[in-house]
Amino acid sequence: MSIGVTFTAYNRPNYLEATLATWRIAKRAISYPYYFSLEPDQPAVLEVVKKFPYTERVWENPYVRGALVNPWFALKRAFKQGHDFVILAEDDAIVSPDIFDYFERMARQFGDHPEVFAICSFNRRVNGHPDQFHRRNWFASTVWGLTRERWEREVHDHWGFTYMNTEWDKRFVHWIDDSRRVCVFPCVSRSQHIGRENGTHMTEEEFEPLQANAFYTGPGVDVWKEKILVSS
Image 1 (tube, rainbow, N blue to C red):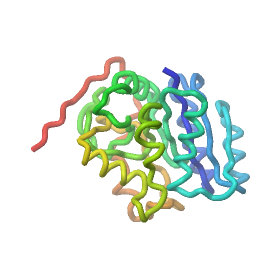
Image 2 (cartoon, helix red, strand yellow):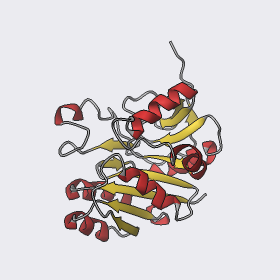
Image 3 (tube, rainbow, N blue to C red):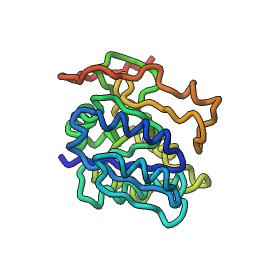
Image 4 (tube, one colour):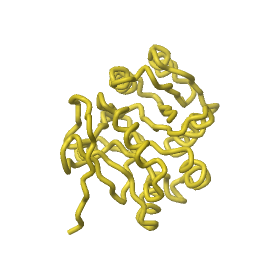
């Protein structure tokens, strides 16, 4: 399975530098291409991207696309490179050392599963052990991925580009719930927000409550086990 990683970034080079430092030391990081969809006129951001050793390609938007539109372009550009699965990353979300172990395993196991919409890496509340994952009818937009089939059939033409027609991440939550679909999550989060300041949708007051209460930084998992969630 061919996997690519695509980033959106805008006006926060300090966060991007810290984030890319975690991707750089992830297990087998050198094995994957990294793409960047940058907003225009951001020389400090571009400099950080150029210093990242695994950068495959950089696109600078002709004008500011914004938080609702730039992610769509980032996914579209990455899938056009021929990948089977694309991970959408952010400039203010660090990742665990075993992030690729997790995405590879889950993408291979659930990529063709008709019930599964996406693979998510963020879990706000620990609900199991570091070697466990679960399926849930929810969506978390902090470092997630999907297959080409999902992109072409269900996402490309059904994105939420404006707040009037519901922004894309909230649209996914409603759609998943209505269609009784699920996403896959690690029981201990493999990504974490660091963007306390200058975020588009998160205020400084919301930062702490919306962080994962645990972020895994341990060794890679040899055998992943599924935890079945029981509704009360």
